[in-house]
Length: 468
Image (tube, rainbow, N blue to C red; front, side, top):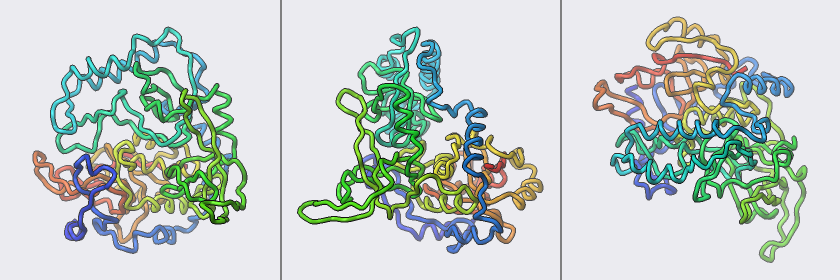
């Protein structure tokens, strides 16, 4: 731990330009070397070369299909949007919305300026927009797809609500962010028409209506999103262009996004601003929301040099590690805020890019695959060590309360992980709760936080599971 502090201070701090106007605390430049991690350990090949059968497929495509079906049947929050009934009792929708509203209203929360959020904000501003009383006895479902990455919120408001002055990046209304082309079932609309209450594959909540295009029916949504021919974004993000000359960029969908293919790729030659341009591109469909809210599809283009694959890459230990390291030093973002990833969001995107329909929440992720062990914090040290020495790096997840990590392996009796983390606690005084901001994806050993009052990552592991 003593090595980490001077190294971290050696970096200058920078603001994220996209959110500088929010006056957020500065971000450390990375990647950071923490605990006993070395520069060599910042490469995926360092870890892959240590494994005997790193490239061996863990599951075939058929096995993966059955595995995903098993995940859906095990985790209630993992919902197949295309199996939702076309109509449902309104009381179910009302009860869920009311629960989310009451839960937040009854908490002591603060706005981004540190002022207590009064109950009148809920009663006079939020609840009228929800128009819960307008939910019919039988809800007739509508079906749509996200036309861009968009946040799923607990309430239909962009207002940030936090637990305390130090929690400016932890909006308690933020559930997660869904990706471009994510299919959703639409239950309800806000009174101002700006929000939809939706069910996405692994989360339910409010999304901005402008980010959802409505399809004529469920079957046509399924045809558009599950044609079987798609590009997988396997990089941190990929540039999508309106033109085959790759000049006019429209979006940068993130890792794990699926882009339906319009064709198998083509050689394009066209005039662009008076010059002949030729490039190898994939042609994909992009959804757009028309003025009336319905969907329109447009052909768009992705360079064949981009970090994408046609269909999912092989699910192997090596590929999990490679995917994880593509996000090294990428920003931490609670619930996908600031285009970042929190701990479980990082794990979710890594596995999603390889075809595993992993849940979004860390507690649910810990239930998938083979259970290696369950522990009490600060106990079972010998058992934990024995399991880690035989666990398969890459596909082994380590869970502690409120945090999720991907296991990388053992070096000199130290256990290493890659994880997206916000801060390291460094003091023994619980009242002061001293922290050192990390705010990114890092490699560290499990001694991180070990000099603080909360104990090390290793001390607080409560479960281990292999995603197999």
